[in-house]
Image 1 (spheres, rainbow, N blue to C red):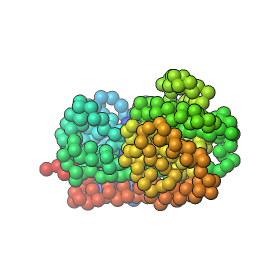
Image 2 (image 1 turned 90 degrees about the vertical axis):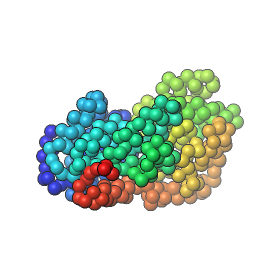
Image 3 (image 1 turned 30 degrees about the vertical axis):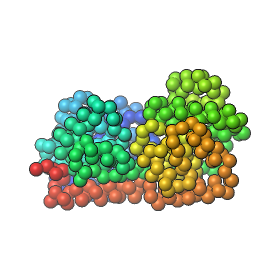
Image 4 (image 1 turned 30 degrees about the horizontal axis):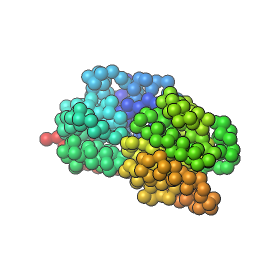
Length: 390
């Protein structure tokens, strides 16, 4: 596999169970973190599932000169594969896992390799079903003892992990971030072009909803709110990205077929933001969605359900209104944005953009994260290691 390198070089490997067609803002986060670590003298690599083989976003790593490996299989297969990667050298090695696929294999490697430390990154809300709670508790309490740090984008997920882990010392809230340069405020010309590309008439207000995982994103409440606006006589259309058959059936049940446009995968999310007047994030459960930050950075106001990750933004920005998951309340918040004075809308847009640049820039986040990696090394006397193992 070509992993031979200087024995003293620190190594950073991001292992992500990620394979969607769009790289979104997650792939730039991984790439930027690895590039930042490399600038400080780390040897860096990324690992994704074999199903990501044809994804265009893999080229981003190649262009940056960051090695990428594809690994799939059972937990035991992955453990052996990772062990083959880290076992060739005694260099301090940090494994940073995402989306659970590699969590336990990485922890088991750390258990038997004193030069290895592990970060788990919790990107999703943990289920409250009894079986899931039991499985989480077993995972966190048995395998979590071999992990140096557990990162969570929002405080509620961090608190849930703490309850199931029984140890708060390892848990840190690490908000999601984006690259604002990739989502500049949309110009009027861009908006006209993107709307026409998606077939949105000039005289219709458009509401964007990301409908993948329809139930979790509560696409039904979005359609209900759309229906309220239609009954009020507003000319509106709902753009549902990746809602599929569930969105189509929901629109038909409500008689909203003429007011809903369902799109498939659109690799360039900026086109969706450009076609939208408001983003509606009505999720039942969410950590801190990239889409909300991307929309706000692009100049699109957001109506979002009352979840901690949404509230983190809504508490700071007038361009992000937090509501209950109630169709009439969501519709009223949407209407307030649609009816807003253009000057106030421009002010809110500029404030949101500036705040995201100051607080949620992926480059600054990458520097903080690499600082944390280096503190982990220092805390173990120069060896990335036992993550608190005794």
